[in-house]
Image (cartoon, rainbow, N blue to C red):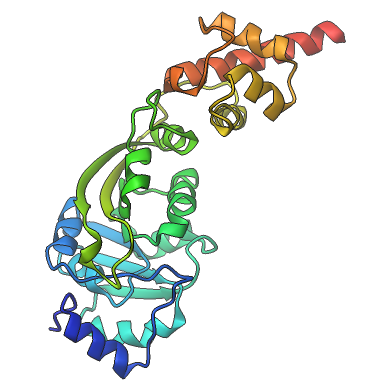
Length: 294
C-alpha cells in the first residue's frame, strides 16, 4: 500500500499521471500522516456506516475511510484525478468514485443507491472557495446523514462553530445551528498540505439535528430575516430588515418590541431563539397590517 502522505510518493504519483495542481479548484493534498486517520475516526466510520466523501484528491482520506467504513462513495470534480484514484484505491472493493459536481448531483439518490440499510455520514477536506455552499447544500437538502465532518479554513471554522449571538457569528452560523450542532475538533497547520496554503485549517463536526431547535411559522422568511440582519452589521436590525425585505420600518420595530428587543438592536444581540421569535412576529405583524389595509 502506498504512503499517500509522503511528499516523494505524491510527486511520483502525480508525475506518472501528468497531473498539475489547479489553483481554481483549491487543490491542497494532505501530507501530515496523522490528520486523515483522525478525521476518519471522528466522522464515525465503521461497520454499518456508509461515508460520502467530497473531493478525494489522490485518495489519502478515502483510504482511511475505506479501512473503517462498510462503504465509501467519493465524489471528485477533477476528471484528471480519476486515473490516479483508480491506482491508489484499486485494492478496495468498498469504494466507489463518482465523477461530478457535488452541488449538481442528486445526492439523495446516490445515498439511497449505495448506503441502503447503513447509517450515513459525510467526511471531506473541502476546498476553501466552496466551503459554505457545500455545507449549506448538504444541510438544506436534509440528506439522511447523521454527521458532516469537514476540514475548512480556520477562520471559517471559527465562524461556523461560533455561538449564535456572539461577535463571531454570522448568517451562516445561524443557518448551521438551525440544522446541526457544530463543534471544532482540531486545528491543522498550513504545513500539513502540498502545496501549503497561506492559512491554517480546522476540522469541524456538524451533528445533524433530528428536528430544528426552534418553531417557525415561515422557514423561508426566517432565513430571509437572518440574511438581512447580518448583511450590514453596522446598521441596526430594524434598518437592515426594513431595507432588505422591503417592509415598513414601523412594522419591523413593532415586531422587535414584541419580542423585547430595542429599535437600535444589532445582529450580535440575537440568539437563535430571538431570531426565530423575530421572524415569527414579523410575519404576524405583516399579515395583520395587510388585513387592516384590506
